[in-house]
Amino acid sequence: MDIAQLQIRLAPMIRERIGLTILGALLFVIVTTSVAVYVASGRSPHRVLRTRDSDVRLRDVVGASAVKREAIDALHLFLNHATFQDRMGGTGHRGVLFEGASGTGKTYIAKALAAEAEVALLVVSANQLQSMFPGQTKRKIRSFFKALRRAARADGGAIGLIDDFELIGSARAGTALLSSRDGASSIVFELLAEMDRLATWQPRRRGRLAQLAKRLLPSSRASVPTTSREPNVLVIATTSRAAELDAALVVPGRFDRTIHFDLPPRSDRLAVAEFHLARKSHELSVSAALVGDLTAGYTPSGIERLLDEALIVALQDNRVSMRYHDVIAAQLITEVGVAQEVGYHPDERRRVAIHQAGHALTAALVGRDVKLASILRRSGVLGMVQHGDVDERFLRTPSEARDIMMVTLAGRAAEVQEFGEASSGVADDLRTATVIAAELVGLLGAGDTLLNLGAAMPANEGNVVEVVLADSAARAKAEGLMNAAADRAACAVLEHRRALLALADALVEQDELSGDEVHIIVAGALTS
Image (cartoon, rainbow, N blue to C red; front, side, top):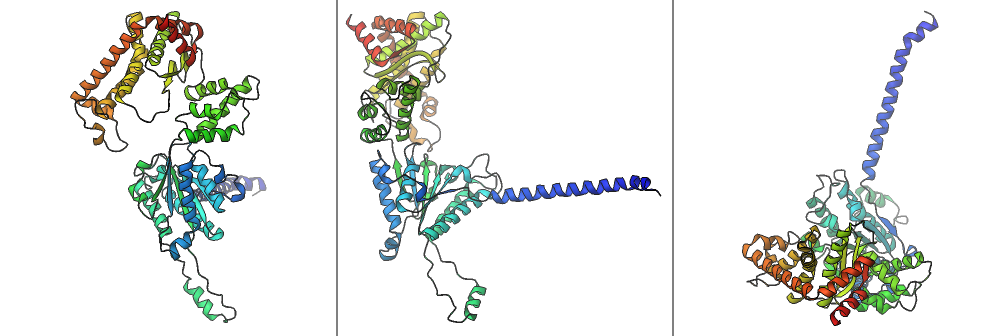
């Protein structure tokens, strides 16, 4: 048999062997990669912030005086944990819940506390702890707490920060990423077990082999017994939905202390504004008092964003300092979006102007602070009138709610008066008015009963509008309130038609009117 024939006969065998080798190699790579991914997916994805890596201290926390006091109390207890527990007989707090809206400074203060304590801060988002693999969410939680205890032993203490805690701490926690085996209850149980482990810590005992080896060593070489101290750990969990957390998480020994991060009052907003204005270029027309008055309902981060947006407006105008009008323009951008031109048909342009003039007129008549009237598109809305309370208010009376409902329905009244019928633009107004009327009847006792219809609703489920609309008597009362508000609006736009048309003409010509311009036009029409 010559070499050529031998090659022909051996070629299929060689190809088969090579194919099997390649297939085996591919299978090996796939299996090892899958195992590596699975193992890695169970590791805690936290990041460690050391004191040297942070330039945030408690002195930098402004505009949160009450929260700061509570945070300092928690820090003091953390730093004196051994004294409090060993000498005074107290039970330490291992978990603190920071509850408040996004942007109120929860993460910022946690970083400041860790920096002041000069301990490591282990930061993780609850979303990062979730996994698509069965059992891995719980493994990540165990891994995070293990790393926290290790850091505490190494540095004498450690603080853990879990952001968006409701994603794993809720009784209904979980997303599509969570495996069916990692149900809400099992995740909560894992959190409970780890928190209980911190509260009932026991030192690790040496294994039998280690103890035997120690006895066999000469006394001169035997290690000196050491006392293994309890790791000083504080776990801070932040959430904007504390009511959704499983009740077992907030009992004593777990997250038993809650610090509420509320929206800052005017005094705190002034402090925040002063802090940022000291670092941002501005003219004398921009003061902390101005910013404090403009930002009712803002979070501290919202105030900073507003001032940064004002600097952007100034930069676009080739200036290096913000002015008063830059702040006003920035507020419109942050609250209602950037204005966009709309290619209206002439008839539509006039109708939209009449509609918005109705809102602006009645808002001015009932003493609201009108900030903007526009027929341009902002945030997907075809024209708008922005108005609010003249002074910062925390309560609202039924009379004030009826005034707002009347303003809400005035756009429809103006359209009906001038064109004989209303357009589809009134749909959202009717929805808003329905909500106000339902809340008046169902929550504020404006119906025939003082019963609060919302009391029957489970927490965070449903809304009072559903309850009111499902009850025939309550529905009739709410409808009566809406009809009365619609009648008031119709009377107002008819009685002050001169002011209505003056506002509409100005909107057709200018597209937008500032609050001052609206009030000037209305005042001029009323006195002429």
